[in-house]
Image 1 (cartoon, rainbow, N blue to C red):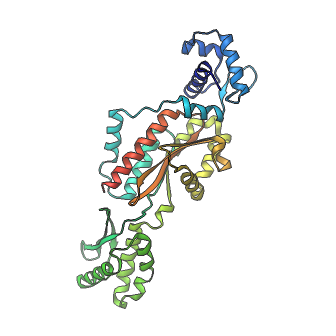
Image 2: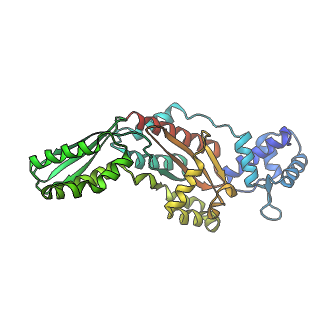
Image 3: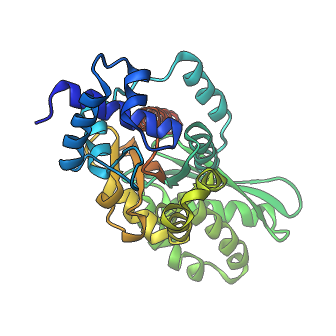
Length: 338
């Protein structure tokens, strides 16, 4: 067990290294953090921390930097996650206000998270767990334009613009009735299965319009979207160009693999408010020089998913954890309120 002084020294090393991006020496710690002990005493404590695996010396005559184990202790015991200020919360609300549908919410969320944390943000599309279709509407806007609208039992309303091919009002009304008869009361998964054979069972004259509207409905209920991840903030990696081979390149490669990102997010969506995976704790080998901070958003039965950030292990964990938690909570409430 480490005593309070060694814990204070570890906290100072992590804080200094994250902010200064340089190995930390004993003299600098004494001067900046008023440890009230001599540099020699700090050096002895640093030697213990190094022997225990919490810090390491990157090269001879350099100061010390945290290891994955050091960051983990910092996150678990030493870091204080402060709630966002009123101004920061208001900025989140302002940024998200006016989102039109789930797609817009996800796009805004990934941009917001990347902007706040200055890291690469990843947001999984929400998974619809239990809500059902309450109503399907087709609203004509002119000769060949219309809106396909789906209302769910959770009160969510989404729409897509479609080309009706000049279908008559009678055909639109006929198809609307058939769709509601077939789909109302079904979950997204069941509705998708019904739609798969719905068009083939329509009268020949309705099949062209039926195919277009059915495709729009499938897109709206988003059966496949839960298997998608949206990424934002990749330019933020340019801040770590000095770590290209060890950190930036692996992150860029992983961002091209949706399956990898879904796996990472899935394993990070545990019971904790915010999950932090540091370095070798990541299951994907190529990302073991990075950290992930993630949190679930939404709630059953309406839906849930995970959002988070990926970046170098040298990150401001308290601020990042606070931002991820705040955004997840806000987006969850935003979606629940429809």
